[in-house]
Image (cartoon, protein in one colour):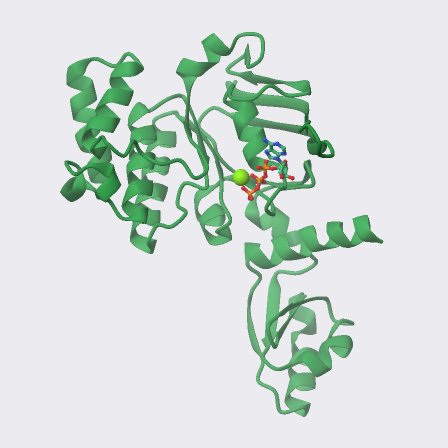
Length: 310
Ligand SMILES: Nc1ncnc2c1ncn2[C@@H]1O[C@H](COP(=O)(O)OP(=O)(O)OP(=O)(O)O)[C@@H](O)[C@H]1O
Ligand SMILES: [Mg+2]
């Protein structure tokens, strides 16, 4: 039997702002996380990801629907939920007048962790995020990426049973991002559960066991990265730089994605030869590679936008 860390059922949220039209940020989101899972929420800007995380972490009340964290209702019993969760908020900043070491320590103590364990966890989190060298400088003097590392260090140090991270690696260099991935993997191996949002789809793929794609306040698709890629009709992608003129002809072979002057055809292995000869006939170079999660995302979300507009 697996324990459920988070269960959301038909969550809706409408923001009402005086003098402005109401915004339906969530229009019926249901999802669930088993204990120990690492799950990513993907979606365009404004899709509703932050709204969902804020509701699930008791910072915002939904208009309707229910969210339970380890069986505790976030609206009915927020005081039972709060000790179980920790949040890296989107665009959160560490306290300017504290050093990263002071901030992490103070946060752990406020959560009821004893002095000795807090000190040990501070050192561990600083090391995991690679910020030992700046650990005793006021946060206001840190670089953007160092501040973000300090925020993530504060939250991973809690080892809370359910961690919410809203774009945790924004502004981080590739080394620091991998430091976050390693830390999150280590935490879930210890039994923590992780729900994160990211616009880096390589990160989502490297890190999460399942993904939810949110669009317009609804879950569009859910599944493993491979399952989501299968939904776009092929596992291979032919890239044809300067292939715009062939776009229409190529569209008979599979889904088309354009990026600058390059046309990508998402297709199956059986169509590759035909596409290559077509490109060669026009003296265009063509290369074959696997479909990335980003391409699948662009396709799936793009299709949904077309449907809404059509
Ligand atoms: N406090 C608010 N008042 C009114 N509307 C809001 C408020 N917060 C968010 N919204 C709107 O709700 C929708 C969802 O916003 P949300 O911040 O959840 O998106 P997101 O998926 O996190 O986007 P991003 O990738 O840009 O962070 C957007 O249309 C946004 O403009
Ligand atoms: Mg957001």
